[in-house]
Image (cartoon, rainbow, N blue to C red; front, side, top):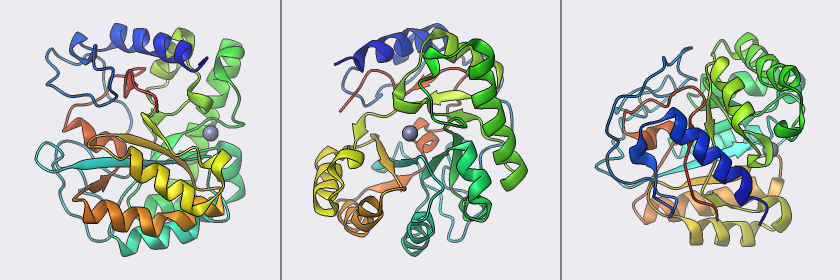
Length: 271
Ligand SMILES: [Zn+2]
């Protein structure tokens, strides 16, 4: 699949930016301890959720510390919003006392500022998903800078939180994109379990696929712009809870380690 090419490049970027211990885990779960020091400063304020091992100490209701070294964690991530169904998802997440990560599109934050504010207020983690959802490696440097920077600015303006994470649309990244993300103080978040909700568009199929891919420390890609995805969430959350999972914002999986600007996480897996 052509998907592997950007991932390989992304992995190389990550290796350049990060300690070597993250290499070699092809399964998608980054296990083992990361040795060495993470260089680079973590800029900005945490995007509404967690810093450090006490992941889950959030500003939202019902904060509880989740230590993913001790309990089974999984990160659910939602791209392309905010949208019409995001509010319903937020209500469900609140009932389950669950925090997730949202990668927001700049022009949609402008369209739905109240929902973006609600995401932040309820303690979810927010990352940048560009302003117009392009394939970033096809753009000129200044265009990449603009896509990421404008989105970061609008998120900060609307929510008061400064994102330090970005997810490239389609998982498409390369060395140039990584360097510009680093310049803007953002690390790059990919995934290692895809709901494929955009092609399934079927509540039952989405729930079954996500649950079949659920493994400890996986990062699941979903999209809150599809009603079927939001409709699948009650079953997904209930089943994950029954299996003993704690659903967490993506950086909680790092057990307190901070990603360097430009670094790619997770590395090496694709489902
Ligand atoms: Zn997207």
